[in-house]
Image 1 (spheres, rainbow, N blue to C red):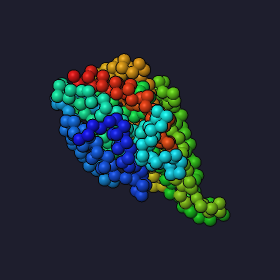
Image 2: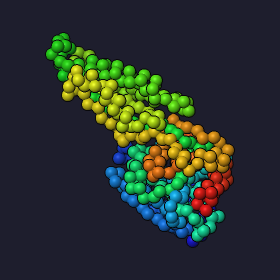
Image 3: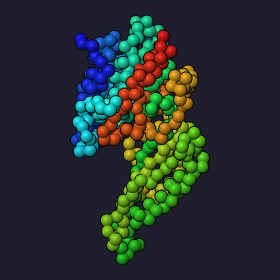
Image 4: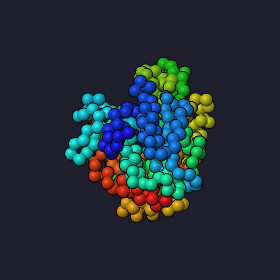
Length: 381
């Protein structure tokens, strides 16, 4: 086996397509990248477990482990990428381009490349002398349903003390982020000729009342569910898309609203859904069997680091940055369910994520490798 350099591994990781998309036509299995990573870490002594993710399109999680016992450190990341904008890239998204001290390619920043950083960081470790286990987790479908992380959390296979999710944070520790849920509200009216409104039930008029109730809920959330450490401190509710009716001279027989809600830590998804239904209860009562609320997809809960093992102090000391918060969602709330202190902390900038010509600066290599090396030594030795 030839010696594999950091760039060799990066190049191989980027060359393996693993796009996650809700649209089946462009969604891809991540099995090939999971197999590559499993062989990569197995070759240096890690025990490998691969789990097929249920209710997903041929998707898999990888857990690699060295050492045994309780506690230890989990280094986690997702193996998938978003789709890419054809015609807007200046190079092949699946061919690593090294130019101007940057690595270009789909997943270089967000975030398949993180596994190359992990591999580089453990090259100097004496793995046979490890006292607490070191885990490496590669998940599926983070960019869509987060099915991989949900499934892994439900299995409860490991109980690390601390976990790092290597999303691009410019090596600044992220200890909180808001959650996200999408909800649909459908109104079933009764269509008819607009010349005689009494012979129909106008779904738009019912939706008008429902929206009034939702806006009152929005104001209640802004007043009573806040976390001043966020740049937008309140839980937010946004009316995103509404459509109803088909002609100006027909009574609207159907109207649909899609809206989202972003919970702050301390407001659970279950509590938020109850608040939505409570706010709409008078409209439900006035128009029985005409209103249906459904979740558009599985929600992503809000996240706050437990910090029971002082991971925040450790990360702040090693990085030189104070803990920060983020407005985007990650797999952190699911990793948190393992019972560990969890931080989102990794190389690269979120500004490059989901963009044409995605890149990561090579300036991150030395500090990231040093950071991971020191964290492993502190927690596992």
